[in-house]
Length: 181
Image (tube, rainbow, N blue to C red; front, side, top):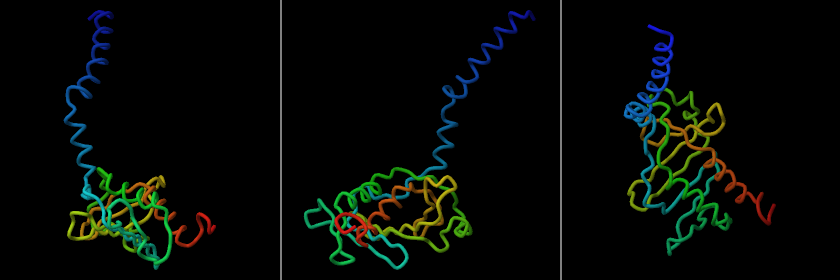
């Protein structure tokens, strides 16, 4: 084999291998991604009520009679901005898929879910039974928190923006935001 043939052969392999891997066989890559992500929060029809719990503290807000806004029910007489309640609800309703980390119930302690740091109870518009989500530790990169749904052994990651919205709500209730700060 001449050096020219070897060079041409090497160039062809360098071009065709990535094409074969990325273009000609996409079902291999898509299959791997789908096995790691699932849609667990089937609340696309909307939320009527959300209860946010952190330790002994609890915030409960529900949709108003017109269905356009939310109002704080508990603690009574407290104020949380409408856009903050809407943002939390929209984030939950808009969640498409989550990354499944584990399906082993023995892993709860490892992810801080044996003694959850907080929880959300979601009452969906078309759901007869509420969905309870428990929150555990942060992931190592501190970009998400480990979570699980009551009644399911699946442990998954939820973005830190959920935790951030909850933290802001408790600050408003405690008077550490807005005019009372």
